[in-house]
Length: 236
Image (cartoon, rainbow, N blue to C red; front, side):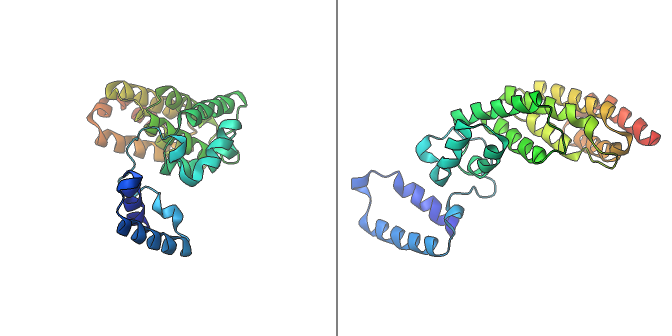
């Protein structure tokens, strides 16, 4: 109901004020009352299943209820403000100013030597990789990916490489040049295989094998990474 209302309202709002049928506006107002009464305003703007494709950068007027979060992020680019802006990114999109703030945050992560298991680091990286995908920002994607590879050594003995692999795959998808993206992804996954603790190589080996099945370009280029993961797994 809320999702349908949001689509209808958005369509009607695109009609010039003098051309909007009064009957439509009356029905829209009644529906808005129901939306407000049931506290489902957020669901009128959240993306539905399948609406994850990159979209154009929104204007400030298109940020809906999320604009204050964007303003705080731009004024003070911190990981806390980034996470508060996450729902807005997933719903309204990424603005040019907030993209600049994301670059500042990932640079600070690298300079401050933030550890993999510190606070909300892994959630911050999820948001940053999403921003890179939505904006097709290869520079941001490369910075996030490089940070993830650097953190492999910090995985605990019983840790998993799955989150790191997921971020690397996401960052690769930010590059529209698919061949270039696959080369970069294969190289990073190979580094992960050589740097990860032996105990963490079981799931890495399985992830690599699945990736080989998903894309023919990775089938041969991941050979060294698979071999390294297999040897490390045996040593563990």
